[in-house]
Length: 403
Image (cartoon, rainbow, N blue to C red):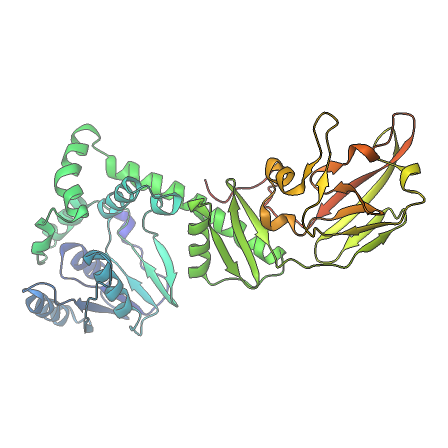
C-alpha cells in the first residue's frame, strides 16, 4: 500500500470516518499530529447509532478528536445515494480542518468509471474521482485511490483492526452494489487487473479534462472576461461537452454556445451606424473586428463600378438578397447563411457592403456576381477579420473542448 502512505501536506486534516474498513485503515495510517475525524450520521439505517458509537470508541482508543454530524437526507428528486452524498459533503464543509481525507479506493474508482460510462458520460464522468480537488474552499484528498480493496483488507487484518459492515452493501438494487457483487467477479475472471486498467483510463481522461479546463480558462481570459469559480468552470465544461444543440452558457455578460459540434463565443451584438467607405484599406467595425481591402487585378469588387458610388458598411436589417455564385439565383442572406453554416447569433454582427442601394458583398458569403471585377480589370478584395469566435489551437485549427 505504498500509494497510501503519503500524508497530505496541509497540517489540519480531518478523515471522513464511516466505520467501514476503508476509512478505519485510512485513519490508522494518518492518525497523530493534527488529524481529526468526522462521522456523518445519516440516520438511514437502524444501526446508525451503533456505527456512531463504534467510531467514538475507536477514536477515543486512538486519541483522535472526533465530531459526529447528524444530517437529514433530503432526496428532492435525487436518488438516495446522491442525496446522502450531498448531505455528507455539506457536513464535511463545516469542519474546521482545511483538508478532508476520504477513503475511496481503486475498486471504488473502477466502479465509478464503469457506472459513468454505462450511463453515457463524457470525459468528466470517465475521469472518475479526483485524487485531490477543491470544493467550496475545502481540499478533498483520496490517499487510497491507488489501493485495491484486497490490499486494504490485508492491511486491516495484519494490524488486527476492527470495523463495521454496512448492511446496505448487500442491496443489489443499488447500481454500485450490483457492479461490485455481480459484475466485478465476472470481470476479474477475464480481466484480473480490470480495476487498474479502469483507474489508468480515469487518469488519462482526467489529464484531458484538466487540459480542457485550462484551455477554457485561458480563452475566457483572452476575451477580457472574469475568471469563473472552479465549480462554475467545471459545470461550463460539462455543458459544452454535452454538445446539445440548445447549449447556452452565460458568463460575465458573454455567451458560449455549441453549434454543429463547435464552441462559439458570443458577446452582446453591438449595432453600429453605417460607416462610409471611400477606398480605405482598413475599416474598424465597432465591437466586431475589422474589414480590410486589397486592390488586385482580376478579382474582387470592380473598382470602376464603385469609384463614383456612395458606399457604406452596415449590419443586417433583414430581407437582404445576394448572388454569390454565377450559376445560382439571387437568394436571401438567411438561406445563404444557413447553407454556409453560420450560426444565427453570428449573422447579426457580420458587416455588409452597400454601394448606393445595392448589396455588393456580405461577410462569410462573398461578392455579388453583378459587381465582380473582370479578369482584365482591378478589384477590391474584402477580408473580414472578426474577433475570434472559436477556441483555436497552435496549429491554427479550431480547438474543441469536448472530446
